[in-house]
Amino acid sequence: MEVTKQDFGTMPSGETVELFRLTNDHGMAANIITYGATIQALSLNGKDVALGYDNLDGYLNNDGCLGATIGRVANRIKDGTFTLEGKDYQLALNNGGNTLHGGTVGFHQRLFTPAVDSEGLHLTYISPDGEEGFPGEVVFVVTYNLTNDNKLLIDYAATSTAATPFQVTNHSYFNLDLPDCAKGSKEASILDHTLKIAANAYDKNDETGVAQPTQRTSLDEDAIFDFRSEKKIGEDIHKESQQLTWAKGYDHAYVLSQEAKNGETAAMLSNGSLTLKVYTTQGYLHVYTGNYLDMTGKEGVYYGENSGVALEAEHEPNAINAEDVETREKAILTPDKPLHETITFQLFENA
Image (cartoon, rainbow, N blue to C red):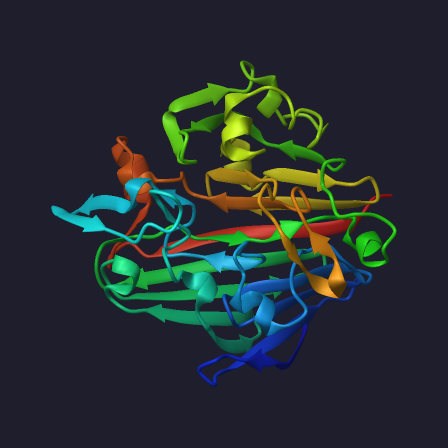
């Protein structure tokens, strides 16, 4: 892996944001910026498939969290409340009546400190005790490494001085047709992409978008949400379903199979000529079909509804409030229980 860097812009505070470009020997490249430890581009033979912005201004106003690292807690915390070690906590409500993606200023809006060595690009952020209402100081390191089998490896490591909820993910949106969109030959949409997910069940949401494990549903019982075999994302997205109506599309947590947790493919996205595979050590895949996207991205391409799909590998949403003790404990970082999780994106051309 070769790593080069350049300045990407200057924050209002005067700090410089850098862009690191990782390349391998087989035509794959990943651009990572230090603001939000964000994937700015992911390409194969010059074909960039990740939604993003050409300049820092886009990321400073990144309402869709394009490409960003999400924390301290990815997804929603119901009512923005939790109880930990006998103390009640109230967080900022930035998504209706819930807390979304870490609060008012999440990790995707923080500047990470970079370092490069033989193991990859390391991006570190130290989250102080009390930041966004969460207890404990957290030292969080995201490591990116690009292998010659076209895998972008994302390694998450974190330690804390006190027990705190901690669940992180990457929030990249992918559209394998983006190279054609940039040429103006088609509008950005992922509805004709096929998707396959190694999951036999998903959690229904409540009306505010919070996943409900008590409403876990077998995919044998809900064909609209069934992606166990390759299916076009748009095949069922407009069918009658209260879940789809509430979310304006797919915005749901899938319970990954044991095989996926053990290293097999968790999800596969394809447009016929390109395929993206996702692997993870985490137990859930939250699928969001860009139902509220509305911005102009790289090369002037308009990103509207369903312009990209986010495949967010993570722990069970709202796990800090889970009734199941084991589920809840997995969502808590403590001084004697550091975090180590991985997400991998593999991109290749179909034969």
